[in-house]
Length: 267
Image (cartoon, rainbow, N blue to C red; front, side, top):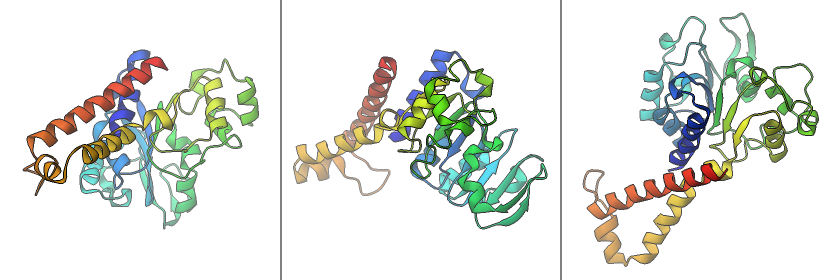
């Protein structure tokens, strides 16, 4: 449900900018073993240039193999399980427990965990769109958001003050950011990025589909008696869900998409 609202914002931005989803290059935090990360992989069609999760960092300038990502997402396996034979000659997977790994471009990675933690600041994650689907809160703050501009010695304070208001869009690390995960960016970092021209949808808007779904789930529990809930909302297995339940799920999906689209248009 959360991904349903996140994707409504992402595709809405593409429509407004008149760009094609399949031509956009994307970076994502949160991998195929998580709810939000796996759904984002399966629902999206951008060229995925990089991902990170708790187990590894992956990059391929030609696009990370979508079939392999889908395999991991369907089985909820982490990125460390990615079949490296599916990478191009310039692609790599670095696991968080690895040390002294040499990348195809000659870069030496001393610590895989530290490499993962700062991956969103490295050139390997440069993309048109960034969708955080996991990661630590406040990973991007006013103190380090200057790294999202491809110029030397850029400070978040200068960004926020408007020094880079008319910045060439090609100098932005990400042109679009839609926050699937909560609090990945601090509020002042968001404002600084917007001053530079980044199209940014914050978490409270983008991922509220999950909140809408949970509210409707609770509503059904309150509105129905125990007997009615067993009859209309319970299934013994995934193949015998009651017709009422199926309709309720579809109407919930429709409500999530409608709310997201209405708020997107208002924004």
